[in-house]
Image 1 (tube, one colour):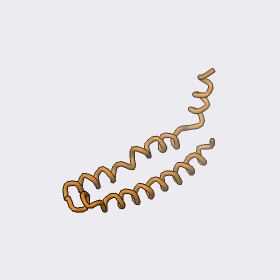
Image 2 (cartoon, helix red, strand yellow):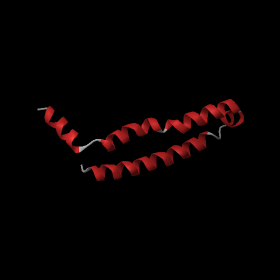
Image 3 (cartoon, one colour):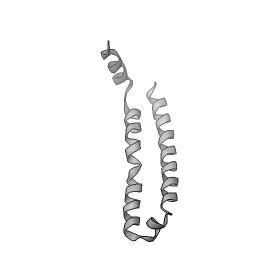
Image 4 (cartoon, helix red, strand yellow):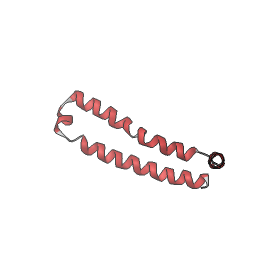
Length: 78
């Protein structure tokens, strides 16, 4: 797959991930335990704010992989 296409697909997927993550995080923040407890709110917003990075890391790694490394990996199997 050409690198430009891979980066385009990855950018769209990252954009969708961040939007879905923000909507879910905002919805979960409305639970009474999180909303009414200051310490729980701080912990929740730190975890929710940084949590999207974990699912994004493999996607960014996939986006930055070059075609040459794919061909090398494919040929090493034979």
